[in-house]
Length: 493
Image (cartoon, rainbow, N blue to C red; front, top):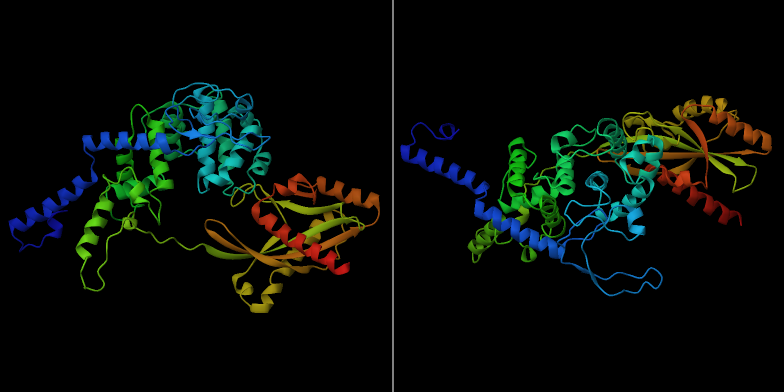
């Protein structure tokens, strides 16, 4: 590789110079033993004094002081030193604590590992503040791996509703069944066996092994990539194969042998709270003395003082890691129908017609309103696009309503539209609605009974808890209908 970048006429001195530069660059990526010791000690001390208190977290070495609020008066009590947070809601209610080790948790290491697993799956692509409530509800419903393994995908999806990326919920369910079948309901303690569980990749396996079982395994996520890239001023696309391997190498070199879980969490905590993507708080960073990116930024700033040369880039800490342009989500349009079965004029006796999505693919197995895709060309025809796909929607609805013994003569009305963004899809949803009034009780009951006999079709009460557990996109459509109904009532009155 060195020879390739040197011209034939270059002298031997030039070859030595290029070679030494490459060796220097390689050395700058490596960590010396003294650096490793210093970074471990500094970061763990910072973490013990500054970590966030999270329901899935343990830190018996914590130096935090916390004011507990009285649930009745909402007044702060005397501060108490934090030792351990218990992940099991049942134990929390009884105010019990268990092991004082880093990996100790609710009952056993395996139980704590389950808590870590659930939290790590939920935290993928989701903010901590959003996850907290979902995590607590999940453990109240499924306190153990065995409880989860006995559930089904539809029940699991209802509990997951609104958190997005539903495939994670499916993986948790499949993984729990695997653990019960192959490991007698106890999560394995090593990375290799954890990787065999459906839905668990290298990051999650390493996180569970280090945090719950104190295995010396490094982790690499977005926060860790950012911290390590700045710590060593790593250039190039962080997703590139060689850089990915380097991040894992550095992480595994750094992870503390005695407190691997806390160290990994400290590295991620630093990236989440101090070494942030756009506004890093370098003056508050415990590793500022070890940060090569900060050193380069200071040197660049010093050299630029008094310079009048235009167009010269001043190095910044935020130059690391290299910004990678994300592929824009593909755009698509669907047309859906909110079909409401109404018992006469009774507002309290209304039902939505729902259909179930395929068991594989986007939002697998979830319930939604009947819908059809709209061709890209038809969706871009200005005012005419408001009617695009309606005939296709009617073709879907009519046989469906026939099977439910509902009058097939329906006159769809445009309700509105909204955009829902997935990780890789920007979806526009044009929403129609139709309310079918049924005067006779027996006919109303017959329609509901007919729908129950059909696979992947059902009516649900508009005021039921099940409606609140539908996916975010479906609830956006319901919000359109609710707003319309309120405005209609106000207009009538």
